Length: 162
Image (cartoon, rainbow, N blue to C red; front, side, top):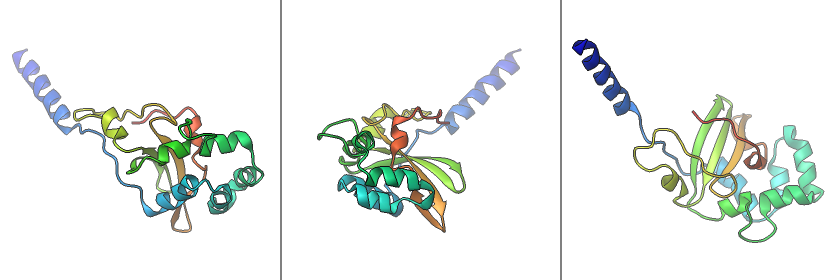
């Protein structure tokens, strides 16, 4: 019985030693290009950068859909919007792969990811959408990562992060 307790305790230590604090990275070139259109408040440029599969969303941006524009660009500085998050550099990206050709990039403003995930945290804490992070869907198309949702998934209930 003592031997079983010792083995169980050692196994628990081994698992906890393997658990690491979630980390984030700098935005890559594809992300920076997409985010620049949002920070610049340029709905036409953002619409132009979306892939063909996102034609309906691009049309809404070009047609001036007020609700959509407010979600992405905000109505006033400080609104809960994608742009408000992106305007607080340096940005930190926590990536959740969906497949080899699809990923979700959770984008955090300066220092926010580290505040939500202090040393010793083992599962990523994403905080609140549009305040703590923007959630952006990217797909690999013709060898390049392309933003497909204009970060509108920020306002949808995210799937649990593993």
